[in-house]
Amino acid sequence: MGVILQNSANRKFRLPEGVKPSEFLQKNDPTPGEPAINEVIKMPGYPKGSIFVLDGLMANSPGFPVGVQINGMSAYQNTLAPPPYKSRNVEAIQRGATVFEKANCAQCHSGRYFTNHDVIPVSEIKSQPSRASALAKLPQTFVPPETYPGNVSVPLPSDPPVISVPLKITPERVRDLAYAISNPAGGYKVQNLIGLYLTAPYLHDGGVAASAAALLPDADGYYTVAKPDQIGLAGTWMQHIEPDPEASLRVLVDRDLREVAIATNRANPDLQAINVDGSGHEYWVDRKAGFTPQDQSDLIQFLLSIDDDPAVLPASAKVAAAN
Image 1 (cartoon, rainbow, N blue to C red):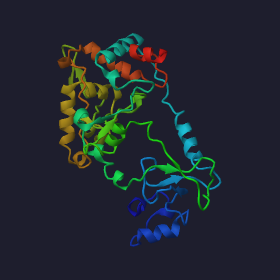
Image 2 (cartoon, helix red, strand yellow; image 1 turned 90 degrees about the vertical axis):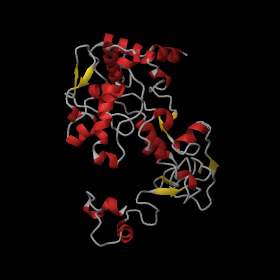
Image 3 (cartoon, rainbow, N blue to C red; image 1 turned 45 degrees about the vertical axis):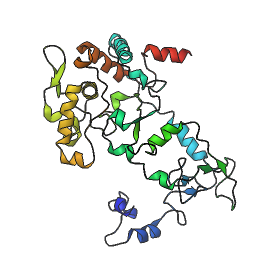
Image 4 (cartoon, rainbow, N blue to C red; image 1 turned 135 degrees about the horizontal axis):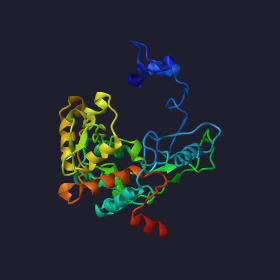
């Protein structure tokens, strides 16, 4: 915490040189007596965490029932959505939805938010592995998840009632994989696809990127790298160049383009220090997979078009909605 506060934007919280972080925080803590600088309550297992509350602390202000603020914030977040995508070519988007199904993208990217919420083992997804096992040490401190009933208000009474938190809403296999319990390598959760036109670069490490000028079509319609210094995270954000969503998605689905991006990222020592290379998710819509340049371009237009109320849905999504 002291390291974070060394250059705090608020000078009140900026750690002076030579001062111990613990002493400084104790002097300036806006919530003295609490185990954090926010208004929190200790969960039944504190100081140990659980799969319900990882650090054993829940944000909760005095005067509010337990969990009501967290639930309210969650309800608000569920209303957030990207601005509607302005479809430029509905026919291309419809063709792209067909390619989406033909390439089996809907096997994982299904449902209302184009994700089945599964966790895919690193050995299968083959993405840069460092983040997949990042939570592996947390379960060593976990206790059975418990909380307080919603009719209990804060400050908590001296001996509040305690209830168990059910875990059956998420399969045990998924929970164990997310926390690298059953598989030390861990895995990655299937990303939703809403708002891709706003969220480049792509993949869990953000390594899949390209500028708008990085790619050009060759004589047969497939794209090649025209500016190798503007591909990958090394050639975009690291050079203060904004990744282009369309070009970056093309790098995502074309193995030849991705090879260049990975090589560029791996040649950058700063990116290697933070484990970024853009590898994995080897599900291709390219020449070697038997798709035409038009198929690839149509798929990209479909992916870009997915907003909170998609104008075009794959056939499988329509069937699921009907059921």
